Length: 182
Image (cartoon, rainbow, N blue to C red):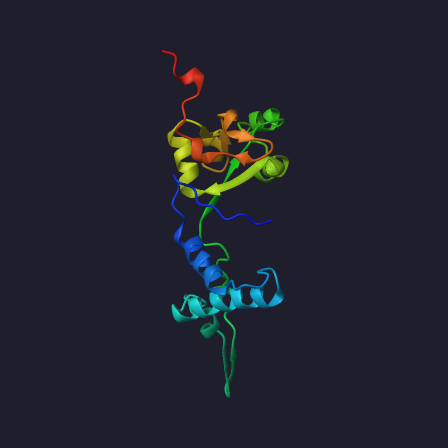
């Protein structure tokens, strides 16, 4: 069963709104999970994006040249230009169960790479603005910035992380009980 809904307090992001329009245009009376319906849906997306030149807005395909004089495949330039996901995501360390590794961040003699490996299973990626807000609200901070700079942002508000659903960065401005006592 598939349920469509809208959140009253949260507007639909523009990227998703366009996909909803594609879905509405492609749904007909038959089963919308049928091969024909799926083909129509992706056809709608293709034609909408093709009209707006969104399929190759950065002109990556045009960078590859084949002519009578030879070929030019600028892989480095294309790799620097191409982004599967345009939103910058930044790491936040969830310190549950790795408190001693977080404490070792202050020891300059330990290579950052070794510490990063020890912490990698406890890192979540969040949008850049969300991490900035976590830091501004005092819910996260850079550990040992004098030794590591801005390399290891560590969550200090453990109540924002939930084992079943992950980090709730949207609640960064929420005041915990301990913050309401003067």
